[in-house]
Image 1 (cartoon, helix red, strand yellow):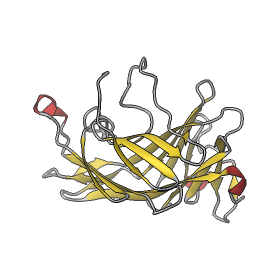
Image 2: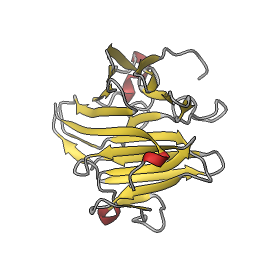
Image 3: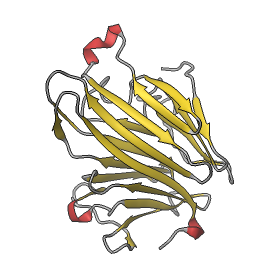
Amino acid sequence: RLKPHAIVTIENEDIQLDVVPDLGGRIVRLVYKKSGTNIINLLDPSENFYPVCGGYDEVTAWKWGGTGFANSYEAKVDGKSLTLVQKKPEAFVSHYDTGLRFVRTITLPESGARVHFTSSIINENKTAKTFKLVCRMVVNADSEKAVLKARTDDGSFITPKSSNPEKPGRFYGANKPAGVWRIENILDDLTLEHHFDKNQVVACHFLDDKNTNMAKMEIHTEEQEVAPGGKISMEHEWIINQFKNVLK
């Protein structure tokens, strides 16, 4: 579990993004250059799932090896764009090959603290498979100041109410954010805002740990049957803003 891994970097004048292709194409650093702040939260090396947890990754409902978070990816950089294509499992773990292939393109603008994702899972099986796509970001968040807000259909931002009282942080149905949710004043006077197509996303999940100053944001597509050669795709964007400049 403790060994070196290659890092691939893309950046513009406002942000730097570091990815480890061998660890699920995981984003391990997202630095806002004006303050030098890294918003990414990673597990401590002593934790059981280190180093394949934390940061940003993409998963599905399959078990270890087919989920996406532990797979190795081919990486290709083209300017400020990085494309990650999941490799087939090695021979000794071939029984983990679900026939699903993750493909992700991460793109930065010439300037601006924005990260755009085009994310897909392709069914390369000869039969239909049922699965979903989950995109998740684990970040550093000040436990005393950070506040979760979600946009409503009328454009206003509110503190979202869980759709299931027994499971706080689950937002779906009428309580699902209308295409935007964010953690305000996450740390160092910064806000992290997440934009997505509300027609592609069926649920948003949020988890925070006040003891470790960690927060996790997930978006889920609907679980669906996908024909051979078909795919589930999602486009979404993460934006870092100064808290004072966030629209209310």
